Structure formats: structure tokens, C-alpha cells
Amino acid sequence: MLLENSVIKWSIRVTNWTEIAQTIQTALGLTTPPIAVTFTDAVPAGSASPQSPVPAGCSFWEMGAYARMATTAVHHQHCAIGVHTHNLTDAPASQQRELETALVAMQGLDYVRPDEVARLPVMSASSRYVLYGPLRDVTQAPSLALLFASASQGLIITEALGRVDGEMPAAMGRPACALIPQVLNSTRSASSLGCCGARAYLDSLSEDVALWALHGEKLEAYTKEIVTLSRANSVLRQFHQNRRAAVESGEAPTVKESLSTLE
Image (cartoon, rainbow, N blue to C red):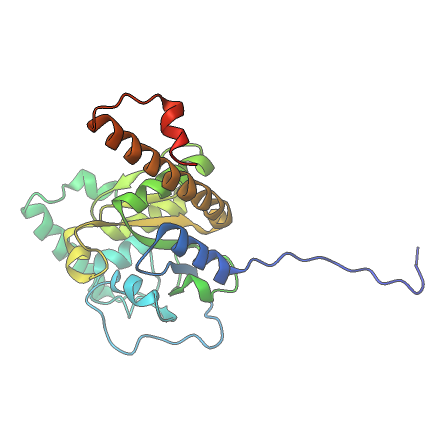
């Protein structure tokens, strides 16, 4: 049935990623802006390739906080383990030899064992490109967002992820790059304490900072809970600080009395 002289307006909801990125950074007080990471077989128009080699694939995380770039296995040439965990296509045979040499050396130190290598998370699907850039600059949901967060910031992230995912996030160890396939294969966001390599290559991954990977499809839900829990933590932190001061001064306040100090 045709309706003459009528106009049908379709409302299409578009996510404001600049707002999402700024909200996350402000609510948590992050020093390093959120980084978008996207696996794809096609490069968006205008994407630039890195102009110089980097010592490890994780170097792109730090660079991606401030600049957009499209990388291939060639750009990850000095990081055979990263190429492996990210399952990048078109990797030269030399990278497989480099991987084998690195694993032999690590096993010789008893840093990793064969059974641990077999359990190492690897991207279930291969991709030609990995895009890095500020989350604020993306036009569609990235595969995931990376956050460099302190322990107190990580507390809020943990509570937010637990609320959205229905379970507490995993905390991973070496290698740091395994965090990405772990999250994308499982669709469960997680954290990484890094590895000695990532901590050597990244200035942002200082002694008091850990890495978080938030699944792209849940970023809006995570952001909402991060804001809510950041506010709640701020109020409750003051509650506990006031209560501590009162008790240490010899008082015996009830919870109601401590709450009244917040008003």
C-alpha cells in the first residue's frame, strides 16, 4: 500500500565513539587514552602504514593511543610471538624460524614449557591487517579497546566487567599479546599483568600499571557501568576515609553516623 505525500523517517542510532572514549578516560582518570584495535582484511581509505620498524608488536599499542595506522605481518617482523598469537597472514617463513628460536631459548630458561606453549591463546581467525588508533577516532566498533590502568583504576574496570559479563575477568600473564586473542576468542574481556618483554618495550606499562582489553561489542555497556561504579567508588572511598579517621580518633560511629558525614 502506497502512502502519498508522506515521508517515512528512519531513526538510525550511531554510536559517538569520541564521547565513549572521553567518558572512559575521564571516569577512570586514565593517563593514556583508550586505544582501538581492529582485525580486518581490508584497510579503510586514508589509513597509513608505520614508517619505521618497531621492536615488538605491542609497541603499536602505545603508538595507537595517538595515531592511526594499518599494520601487516611485515610491520610486526621483529615480533614472531605477536605474529603467532595474532594469526597474521602473509608472514614470511623467517618469522616461523624466529618463533621457534625464541621458544627454544625461553624453554631453556624454563620461562615457558611445551604444554604452556600449546595452551597459548591464538586468534581463531587469521587476518591480513591489524588497525591501531585512538578509540575517539573510530567510526564503528573496534574489535576491542585497550586500556593502560593502575590498580585503583583496574578495580573499577573489574567491577564493571563483572557486572556486564556476569563473571570476574581473568588476569593473564606472559605473553602480553595473548590477551588479545583470549578476549576475542572468548568474547570475555580480561586484563594482563604484561610480560617482561612488553614492560621493556612500553613506557606506558610502568610498574604500577596493567593492561586491559575490552571487547568491542560491549564497549557501550562497559562504559555505562564504569561511570556508575566510578561515582560509587568515589563516594564510598570518602565514607571509609571519614570512618577510619573517626575510629582512629577514639570515636565509635554507627554506619548511619558515618554516612551523615557525606551529606
